[in-house]
Image 1 (cartoon, helix red, strand yellow):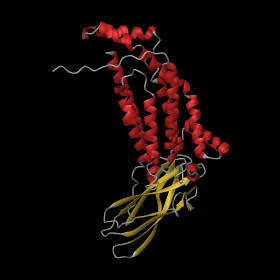
Image 2: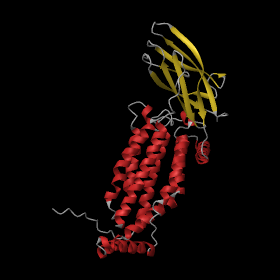
Image 3: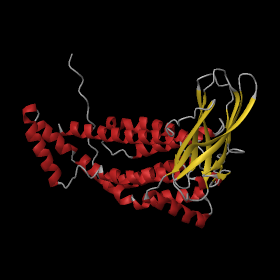
Image 4: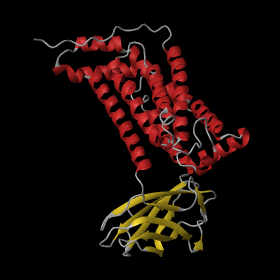
Length: 386
C-alpha cells in the first residue's frame, strides 16, 4: 500500500515538473496578444512586452481593409515615445527597424510579422508609444506611403529581485573572465556547490528508504490482506520514524531549487548583452538554436538531451525499481532537448552544464551513501493468473 502511494507521489511530482516546463515553454514561445489594427486602408497595430535589458519582440499586425489585394507591404518604426528613430532601443539582426510581407495580402486578411530590437540600457519609462510608416502598392499598382501615429505600445515591465541578482553575478563574473560563456559556466558550478547540501539531503532520503525495503517487504508479508491496510500503514510510518526517515526530505530540495531555476530562466534566456557574445558555432548566446543554420541547429538540443540522460541514469540507487525511473530516464531528455531548440543558447548551455555537474555530484554522493549497503533483490512483478 505504502509502495503504491510512494509511486503515485513520484508520478505526481514528475507531472508537476512537466507542467512547470510546459509553462516555461509557453511563456517563451507565445508572444503578446494580437494587437488591434487601425481602420486605415492598410491597418497597423503593434505591441510588445519585455523586461529591462532584454531583446524586445515587437509583434506587428497588418490588415488589408480594402476590397483589393495589396502588395509590397513594408512597415517601419519612425518614432518611439515622440522622438524620431528607435531610441532607447537598438537594432538586433536587422539592417533597419522595418519588416516586410513577402506575399500579397488579400482583402480582409491579417498578417503578423515580428521585429526584434534590443535594450542596451535600462528603460527609463514603462510604456513607449510607437509611430510607424507603412508603404504598399494597392490593387491598381499605385504606391502609397502613410505615417500611423500611436500604432501601438511597447511595455517594459519589472524583473524580480532574484533574477536581477543573478544578472549582477553574471556581470561580475564577466568582468573577471571577459567571457559570458565562461561566466555561465562559473555561475552553474557555483550554484551546484551551494546546493550540494540539498542534493545530499535528497539522495540520503532516497537511500535511507531503499535500505528499509527488506523490512517493508516483511511488513507486507505480515499484513497481506486489504483488511490489514490500516495496520500496515501504521507499522510502516513507525518504521520510518524509528529510522529517522522523512518522506518529504526527498522532495524538499527540488521545491527549493525550482525558484532558482525560474529566476535563471528570466535572467538569461533573453538577456540583450548576450547579443554580442559568440559561442563556438553560434553567433550569439542570446540566439535560439532554431534560428541557426541547419548544420548547427540541433547541436545544443542534442547536448541538452544527452546530458539530461546522463544525469537521470546517475541518479539510480542500487536495488531501486527501475520502472519508477523510466519517465526521468527516457522522456525527460527528449522533452528538454525539444525545449532547448526554442530557447537561447545561453539557457541551453546552463542546463547542459547543470545536468553534467549534477551527474558527477550524484555519482559521488550515491557512491558514498551506499557504500557497504547490501543490494536488495529486485522486485519481481507477478504475472496475472490465467
